[in-house]
Image 1 (cartoon, rainbow, N blue to C red):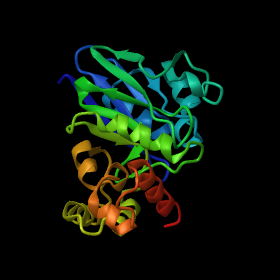
Image 2: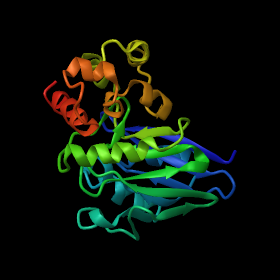
Image 3: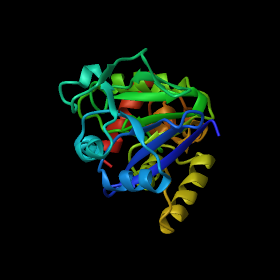
Length: 255
């Protein structure tokens, strides 16, 4: 295999990820909400991480880092713009930079909105992207620091990725996101079907993350402000995409 991708549930509803280059065996850990389940996943596979990629500074994405580094002194990669709030970085990166993991190359994208300085890592050869709390399954992160316009700009960057990109987001929020999405996009047959599948999966304790970008394009309202049905529901037929996005985010905040 050219790569292996492992999803690791952490805390109450977080996810961390392992990405392994199938050629060299090098491993990256993406976000560290807590160390214990990540260490267990590494040890069960006999993997040794060489890098840790951090998407943003929030505690539920970095708090497990000291314990992970105590076991495996890996290189820590994070956003230069967020370095003053992140744990100490070995490599500070910005949009346009790349990170090499064996034969895999990750493209760094600034996806500010949820926080200023939030980054995503897009790995074309592995057909995956680590988006944490920017683009999420059927949602996007709450705007703690950025503006709706900033987040919509970030969404448009991620919409440029290929449809078969696996979106590795940071939380198991999909069921609640689906309930909200149906309030702004009630006539979307693909969304109705997906919501039903999510309900069934969660009833069995199965994760709904990661997801495919093609699925997000078809069902995630935060990627669909141009959709006539959503615009009709919101009463915003002639508004800009950015303004429609802002209204969707406002409604989600109050949902």
